Image (cartoon, rainbow, N blue to C red; front, top):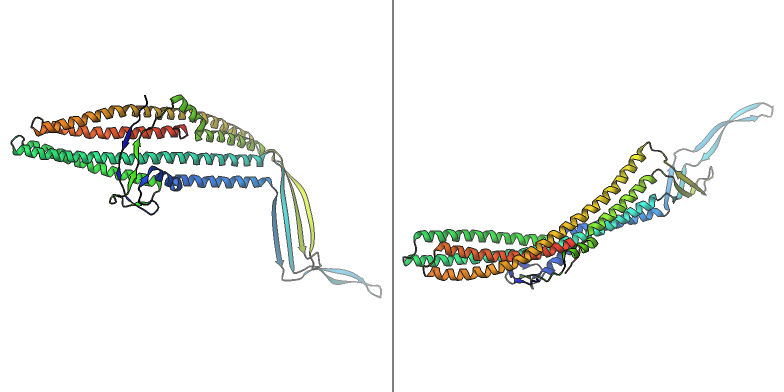
Length: 447
């Protein structure tokens, strides 16, 4: 049976900062602020940007790498080579004379442009790029998941403020009823129909109600602070401005999904399952990269260089160099066998983790669905209980005023009425919270 219940609560709030205005706050205001300012969402967004940079960096590894260099040196003495040269004199004798040959300049300069090109690496570069691409997908899914979680938590925090406000109203009503009870008891005492013991009992009950009101008001402030923290909304003057208020209703909606359909939606939309699938892909690439470490890799390189001086002449000269290089670490002890075993186990672990996530998601969907059904049923019971408690309180007040009822019985009627109000509000809150839990469990804003 479909049930549609409306439960309106007006909550005192707050002097708003200029970003909010004087019109009051709705749930949508808190959600917009949370999406913009919540720390978890902002951290997840920064992680996405980091992963995008990592992907771009890995993409650049496919292309040639160029570098340029320039150097200049100065030596404080001439670069000369001294040697003895044989000379023949006119008389036919051979003599040796020291000769100095200039070998270079005091000042030396060189400039070079170098290119390094990966020709074939057995998938090492491709694997690193695929891993970075899958990592970016994971970060995007994490961002989406955290965004959904924050939205659901802000909604529940908003409903909790409304619930806390209703509990405060119920506690204030209880104090008021206890004060009326005390006045009636005092009148009955003056007319000889009540004793000092009766007055003392009512005062004790009144003190207990006042203590309950203090606790309820404290819980309301805590609920507000939690909502503000989650949403990042800047608000001051929480108590003194009655013109600003939280606008919204604790209102259930028709919910037509059955359990099997919700599980099917969750299996299709939950971010965690997509993340688990990407993790399997990453571990498979890591497994291949472990194998590729022991396969040859081919690179081409080239450079163009300018130098001055050219041997002994003080002038610029240029030349180019080209070549190829092969790296083949074909044996690294027995490490390759351990590495392959480790990477294979990592793939198996990722597959098992995905299956575990599937079962946990199913359990989460079932739990949230059953909580929703329980809250849906309790609302009817609590509403009937509240109606009966209200009637009982009215009758008890009339009978106590005529001296036909003890103050303990009247106090019991007041407590029953207060508890019924709180239980009714709590059941509506539980219903709305369960709906948000279902949305999170399904991984989609199901309506």
